[in-house]
Length: 201
Image (cartoon, rainbow, N blue to C red; front, side, top):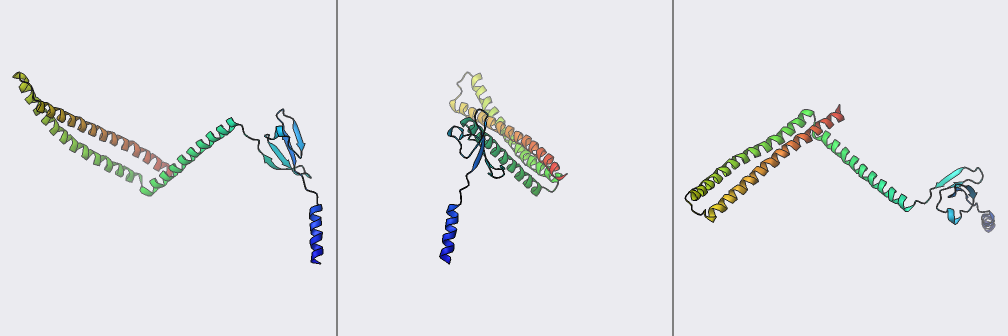
C-alpha cells in the first residue's frame, strides 16, 4: 500500500506541468512586451513578474544600473552614511548634555570655572612676562653701555638678549592662546545653553 501511494505521488509530481514565469517589460524604444523569456537585448531593462492567472504583479525586478548611475548611488550612499553618523553623534551629545547638567545655571557655573582657571594661568604668565621683560631690559641696558663706550658687545651678552627675547615671545604667544581658549569656551557654552533649552523647554 505504501509503495502504491509513493508511486502515485511521484507520478503526480512529475506529470504536473511546470508553471513558467510571465514577464512584462518595456524595451529601449519604449515598446511594452509580455512573455515568458526576456530577450538578451532587453535583459538589463526593468521587468515585472506577473501571476499567469490574474495578471497581477507579484515582483518587480529593477533594471541594471549604468556605471555612472552606480557611481552616483555610491556617492549618495556615502552622503547618507555621513549624515547618519552626524545624527548619531548629535543624539549622543544631547544625551550627555542632559545627563551632565541639571539646569542652565549649572552650565553657566561650569563655564565660569573653566574661564577662571584659565584666567589664573594667564595672570601667572603675566607675572612671568614682567620678570622676563625686566631681565631683557637689563641686558639691553648693558649692551647700550658697550655701544656708548664704543666697545664691541660681547657675544655672550647678545646671546642672553636673544634668549630673553625668545622667552618673551613664547610667553606672549601662550597668553594669546589662552585668551583664544577662553573665547572658544564662551562660544561653546553658549551653544550648550541654547541646545539645553531646546531639549528641556
